[in-house]
Length: 133
Image 1: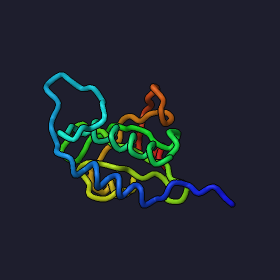
Image 2: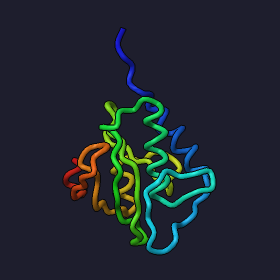
Image 3: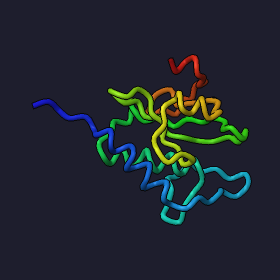
Image 4: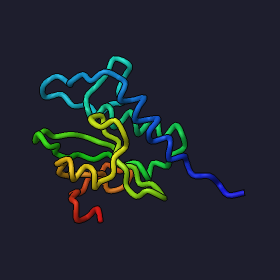
């Protein structure tokens, strides 16, 4: 019997559950990248919270990468990029109701900046639309 890969439906379920928590901006000059709590959190807390929930559903850390981008308003923003075996890279974003393709985010005006080199890595690399092809 083949080992089943974590279900793609996990992405929508995790995105919905974590996005339902309240948004709460970090104090100025404070950014801790801790998982979101029931009291809420900011974009990096949403991204880390989604990463932790997917790990709990047996998604391999190598497929889960934190990333930073600029959104259409010019604000700096953190998201979770999931490398899926069947759907390519999918982005979980607290600003979007559903998991997004990179093409969708590009059309919305997002501009990628930095991404973890590999899931779980402390090394961040440049992230741009060309490197995502």
